[in-house]
Length: 136
Image 1 (cartoon, rainbow, N blue to C red):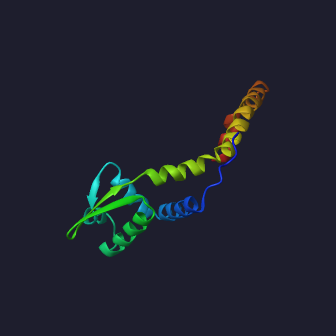
Image 2 (image 1 turned 120 degrees about the vertical axis):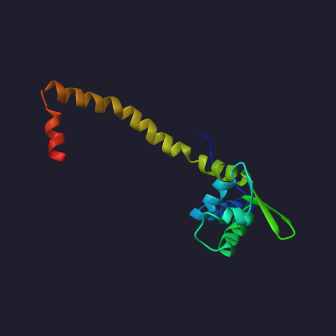
Image 3 (image 1 turned 90 degrees about the vertical axis):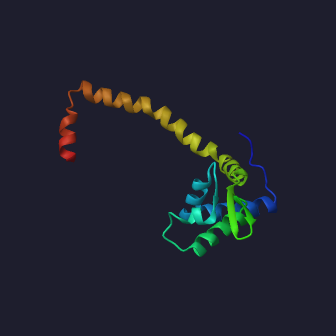
């Protein structure tokens, strides 16, 4: 297994902004709505039960994190998803995949034992329906 690569201060700062931006459900929903579309700020704000100004503040957090870009034409502001910072965050998370993969490997190794245990119970005439009735 490869050792995690030491990231630069700039990469750490970007990750901090991305994770902070993704921590809010409104901002995650904004990103979901922008998937494959460009939308006006007013269009983004429609489904939320918050003010247009509050949605604009959420958008600015996403812009600072590099997750969306805004193009302004006069008073019209159009937003577009930029998924590259999400890919960077996913890469950072993925370096820890070995830990949860070990848990899956342990589970896979344990499943035959569990199956054998159930088979032995069945062969001893154990009635599982009694167990189920007791749980109700």
